[in-house]
Amino acid sequence: MQDFMEFLRTRRTYRRFQQKAVPAAVVDDILEAARIASCGANRQTLKYLVVQSPEQVDKVNGLVHWAAYLPPEQGIPKAEERPTLFIAVFQDEALPGANDTDAGLALGSMTAAAWSHGVGSCIMGAIDRPALCDLFGTAPSLRLHSMVAFGYPAHESRVVEMHDGDVRYYLDDARDYCVPKRPLSEILLGRI
Image 1 (cartoon, rainbow, N blue to C red):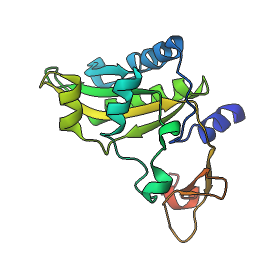
Image 2: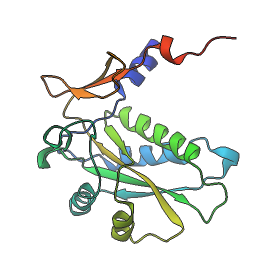
Image 3: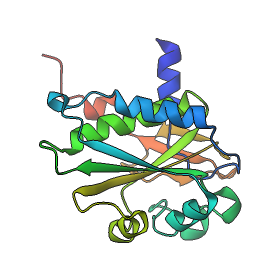
């Protein structure tokens, strides 16, 4: 169990990546993890679009927003640090029951599957949805839920103690991400 908890502690958000392509077999594992994720009433309303050509990845990179808590010079990946892969997550509203809970379960499965291969990720909701849908040419019934950036991390990301209730992540002197988390005593309402 300790190994699994360490896996969860290190499966953080990553925002700077090595310029190394994610192999097709790893992309397939990420998609398979999303495909088999739990969902309400087994409705399976999610659809995915893989963006991996350097030209398309570059276009997507201009339509997503990085690291809101950091100044742009710290939070936005430089050209040599950008992800090498994005996956767009859509909710197919032509199917009954599309909801954010199912999307969250799929996103968690996708990012865990990626991390099992040493591939970091960043789930992005601050995105230009209309421009991305235009870029992708998707049907109106497909609502873009989020974009997920993937790549081999070029930095560390770790959980740290929260100070003075401040939830904002920050960079340390090595430009590694420090992610404050509330202690269990603040989130546990009780045991009954």
